[in-house]
Amino acid sequence: MTQTASDSALSADGEQRRFASLDPRTGEVVAHHPIHTAAEVEDAVSSAREAAAWWAGLGFEGRKTKLDAWRRVLSKRADEFITLISAETGKPADDSRVEIALVMDHLHWAARHAGRVLGKRRVSSGMLMINHGATLEYRPLGVIGVIGPWNYPAHTPMGSISYALAAGNAVVFKPSEFTPGVGTFLASTFAEAVPEYPVFQVVTGFGETGAALCAAGVDKIAFTGSTRTGKKVMAAAAASLTPVLVECGGKDALIVDSDADLTAAAEAAIWGAVSNAGQTCAGVERIYVAEDVADEFIEIVVKRAKKLKPGGEPSANLGPITMPAQVEIIREHVQDALDRGGKALVGGPESIRPPYVEPVVLTDVPEDSLAVTEETFGPTVVIKRVPNALEGVRLANRSKYGLGAAVFSKARGEELASELRVGMVSINSVLTYAAIPGLPFGGVGDSGFGRIHGEDGLREFVYAKAVTKLKFASLIDMATFDRSSMAGKQMLRLARMLFGR
Image 1: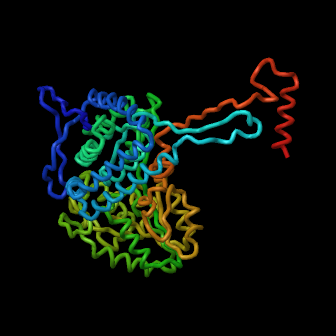
Image 2 (image 1 turned 180 degrees about the vertical axis):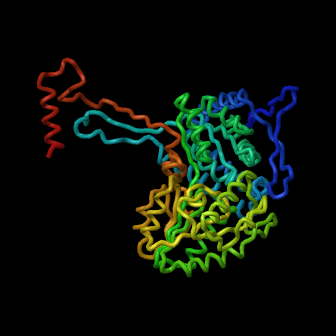
Image 3 (image 1 turned 90 degrees about the vertical axis):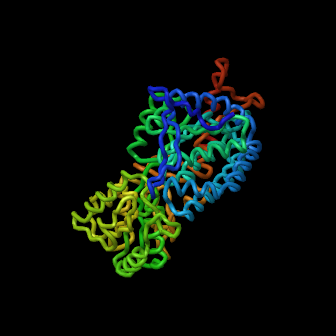
């Protein structure tokens, strides 16, 4: 059976409705893809329902065998995948290689650890219920709808897809309209490894297709995207009480303490701010640096940032802005910062030449400016001098977002990290938590809720099932109307003796 939903979406004149994915570097058409209708999305979910029963029935080891086979297919076809990711996003080939490496690592981890994390296990019954045995297991939800982003079109959605599949669910994936080919490639390679049932399907299109997936009767929605769209997904899911996992944007801060290795901190700051052309939800957008080391730190950052150039050639440091509308948001944030008294140490409005944006380093920007409060999603960063690192933490925590953060300090890294109101922190590095499969990824506040990756990521796609079994009759049986008039007193006396001291 095919693993990709039907291509039969028709326009009013009977012709198939399709759209083109474009190479943002050149504007050339990469491929055409169908705009799947609500009826087709419902058909995909319906066929996934039958596939889910078969997939769950394979058990953890059976699914691991299949997922390992898929991983080998992805490895074998990695060069083809690299070319496709770079074509649809514009990112340099090396960035695509890293993304595929992370896909394989997370897929391996999920398949290997699902049985340990989710398998049936005994639970202590406690002293009051010692006559009962207790077990706990985690059962797959059924069909998971995944709505993915365009900035990391393979790694980010696979943070849901890999773990949902390893947990025993079928998946229907709606990739971004900017990277539909990446989603189709994932589904087609899965079909090579698992041809029996449509366990993993892809539906392509625009917002209407995503809305149709939310309304198609899936058992959970895993969404990655903007906070605004995440709220729409939640509203749509609320109508049917469909649970959601929402990973939204960030305005992540980097804190540089007085004792930090400034060269390492500056290099990490530029990488976190500019890699992937700044199109990283957990990228560095704000830097708070202790006053006594600020001059040296800023000097290194400026020198490093000036060397980086965007372009479409393989040797370019960063690619284009994938989504054309984002260019205007970047322009607005930079201009607002300058209009409010900020200074551009590197670049400025002239750095914005669609589809490319050169690195922009800003300072003296008011804390209530757009460049500080809203997600810019471009190769820009704001640096602010602070009296000390704790003041940097305080300012970092004022954001409505709470995805990730980074701290550079030789002596107080863990102390500062513990004070940050975020889901993830890297100490003396940036973004490393996203590359460790065993760690959960997600945030708080306007950055969303729920987790992908790690044990928490596996448990997002299951429900807990508790079972008790009577082993022998209790001397104090409270679960009957024929109980002794002394039973309640005896139960309380026992509880007070065991737990009341």
